[in-house]
Image 1 (cartoon, rainbow, N blue to C red):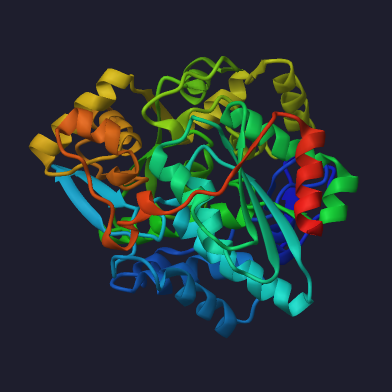
Image 2: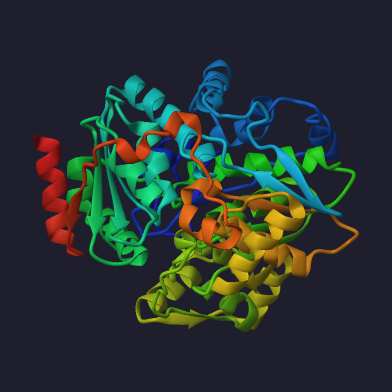
Length: 462
C-alpha cells in the first residue's frame, strides 16, 4: 500500500513513513493510492465481533508490511484496553431511526482517543524498532491536544508539544493538557485562534531545516493514521444496525473535516452509507461551501462548542482531491487561493461533493435548546458538539434509513454550557475526579514562528 500527496509533488510513501511524516513535503496531505475494497460478505462477517477484531479487519489492508499481523493485533488491543466501555463505541437509541454513537469512553473523554491511542502505540513500536526519536508538534482546538498528550506522555521515543489557542478551550480541555507531569510533554498556549495554531504547525512542516533538524512528526488529523483509525467505528456501528443488508446515514459534528472524511473512506471501501451529514456551529465555512461552492474564510466567533471554532478545515483538502478526480495541481492551486482568503469550487466538483455530503448549521441558542430537549425527551445529556449533530440529524434524517449521530465528547468536558441548558452539572468520571486539584504546567507563547521554533529546539536540547 502506497500513499500519495493531495498536491501531487511529494514522493509516494509506505504506511509507516506516511504515519511518521504527517504532512507531505509539498504541503499536501497523504491519501491511499488505492482504496481497499470489502465485499458484502466481508462486512457481514463482522456481525457480533468485538471492536478490536473489526478494527483489525478494517485497517489491516492499509498498513501493508509496516507491522506483522500479530504485532498489529497486539497494538490494537493495547490501544483500547483503557476505554471505559466494553463495546468501546456503544450505540444508544435516541428515537425512531435515530441513534447516538458514543465516542467518549476513552481516556480523555473524546472521539480523538480512538485514533490517538492507536497512533501512540504504532509510533512507539516503529520508533523503537528503528532506534529513532521524533518531535511531535500538534495544534488543537481542545480535544486533539489532550488525546495526544495522554497517548504519548512518558514515552521514550517522543517529545510532544501541543499548541492551543489561549483562552479559547474549555477548562477541562485545558487542564487535561496542562496537568500531566511527564517531562516529554509541553502545553503551549498561543496568543491567537486555532487557525493560527494550525497555520504555525504547517509553517514548521514547510521549514525543512527545522523539520529535519528536530525530526518533526505530526499527529493532527492531517496524519493519515488518525483518519484510518476513525474509519473503524463507521463499520462497527453500521454492522450493528444491519449493514451490509441495510443502508445507514451518519451525521458528524465537525470543524476540521477529518472525522467525516473517515466516513467517506468507509463508504469507498464498500460500507453501504447513504448520506454523510456535516454539522457545524456558527463558524460554518464547511456548510457555506457545501451549499454555495464558496470556501471563503471569515473571522472565528468563540462559541460554547470550541472544538468547531475553525475557518480552515485542513482535511477538506482530502475531499477536494477526490472530487477533483485526484488532480494534485488543481488542489495546489486552490490551496494557494486559500492563502489569499478563499476559493470557489467548480460546478462539476460541487456535484461530486453533493453526491456524498449534506450539511447543516446550528446557532448557539439552538445548541442550548437541543441540550435541553435531549435531556428532557431523549434521556441523554449531550455535550454542545454532539447537540449540534443531533439537531442537524433530526432536521435532515430520512425515516427509511437509520441515522447515526456521532457523540464526539463527554458532556463533562463542557460543564458550563451543559449546566446552563439542562440545570445539571455533569461530573467527570471517577478516574478524573481530582483534575481541578492538579497543578498546571504550561507556557504562553506569541503567534510567531521563529520564537516557537526556538522554544521547541531549546526544550529538546535541555
